[in-house]
Amino acid sequence: MARPGKSRFWISWGLALLALGQGVPAAAQISFSVTLPPTATKEPVTGRLIVVTTRRSADEVAGKVEPRQMIGMNGPPAFGVDVENLRPGASVTVDAKSDGFPFGLDQLPAGDYSIQAVLIPYTQAKRSDGHTIWVPMSDQRVIAPMFPGNPYSKPTDVRLDPAAKAPIELALTEKIGPIARDPDTPWIKRVRIKSKILSDFWGMPMTIGAEVLIPKDFAKHPEARYPAIYTYGHFGSPFNFDPDPANDTEGARRGAADANVKTGYQFSQEWDGQNFPRMVGVTLETPGPYFFESYALNSANNGPWGDAITKELMPYLEKTFRLIDQPYGRIVEGASTGGWEALALQLHYPDLFGGAWVFNPDPIDFTRYQLTDIYKEDNMFTLKINDWITQEKPFRRSREGHPLVDLRTLAALEGVLGSKGRSYYQLGIWQTTHGPVGADGYPVMLYDYKTGVINKDVVKYMRENGFDLSGYARDNWATLGPKLRGKLNFFAGEMDDFYLNLAVYRFQDMVAEVGGKDYPIRFEYGRPKKGHNWHHTDWAGVVREVADHVRKTAPAGAPVDQWNY
Figure 1 (cartoon, rainbow, N blue to C red):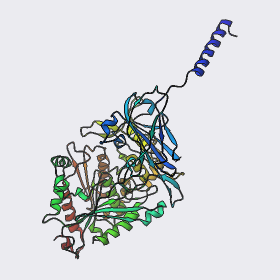
Figure 2 (figure 1 turned 180 degrees about the vertical axis):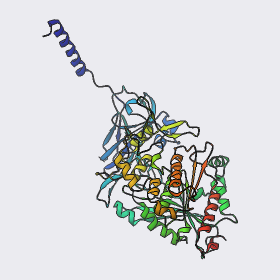
Figure 3 (figure 1 turned 90 degrees about the vertical axis):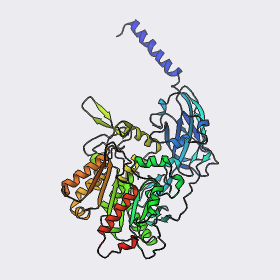
Figure 4 (figure 1 turned 120 degrees about the vertical axis):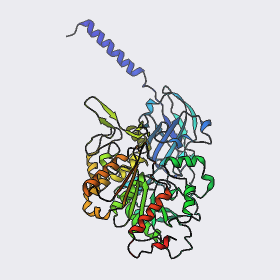
């Protein structure tokens, strides 16, 4: 039993705590109330709502870059929430419980900001695999916050203070306008066709397209059939072809020279010149529900893009533009995402393509999924040095090795952009392409975006389904080795910004192990301090290399003189 004095003390202290709990409200936090006006839409919206905050004032951004246009890995703080069946006139609260980049909203410092909200409406897809899901959809090659038709608010200057009690009110009164498609020119022809294969899978109309660069005097040689270089890149015409001399500025030349290439105008002069190989350049346009690139292969989440490309689009292009419909006349080339796509197509369709020029590809060996061996390690974000020390893994570095963005921070950005693999950004598309479909119809992610913990079941699926391209080549070398002799050409800078050269080294080691050190394959590395944009020669040089390869590998009697006029 306690002494009377002590009992009175604890009773008094307990009553004081109770009074504090009842009389003092919870700490105020910054929050936003975002309204979807009845003028914005007539139907309820399911999608992703994002609020962007920047220290620039509305006057500073007027007529320039608005906060919503600054979203990115080097962009300002942003915060996102899913909305479901949001009705016209209703509001959504974005607060500390929302996903945040590079930190939560409860960590945003007080200060003067320009803020803006943007809503990404999703489309309901009733897929042929039995799943009904909501996904961002556009046929334009832009990130989801920039989709035409997205409602958004005007930039607003506000004072944000965690001590404020009322939420900041925003209204989605504006709408992103359509993006005009460039017209055809004498050199560039644009194609877009409906894909029955993709439409059947997604349960909605889906298209697939291309920009086609035709050779000099194409119309004057109606009997000629041409080799095609299928180029994979995020934006622009094949080889950045640009016949406008006004764009051949000193700045453009400096930027091109940094990548060891020439400007689009300089390339156009060689393309139109004498004694240049007459080939056709094709840049595929394959935006889908998870990214503005399809990643070229059939995928449980993305859909049957490999079939659509090889069975629908390529035959159409071959017929329309008189392309050689034999493997020796089909060459794939790409950089970064396009590098992965080019290699993936050559490996998974070895009898369809005659060679691949692969520049700084996305991870092609998953023992080096950037800096992580996903087979042996348990966490994507951290490297355990010992029992006391762990280090954050960078996603991007400078050419001198300085870490610029760590993987955890990028994952936070993608968490803001979309849940369930719908970020429409880099980490999300890798995982939606490589991984399995979950019970809810959405991708099962390789790792948790909050903790970085790796899902080993997903790792197993990725390897067994051929998305680790080095592992796939190793597992199928008995069949692939003879078919790939002399067809693979790899190029990477030793200081690739995203550490992608490491997987290329591993691929080279794998080929030496299973094919022997004399196996005919090409690897070239940019040294010293060459980054993600490095090329071993300019685009005209690449075309000449491809032309030499096609002439050497053409079967006896092939009419190679038709395209060497």
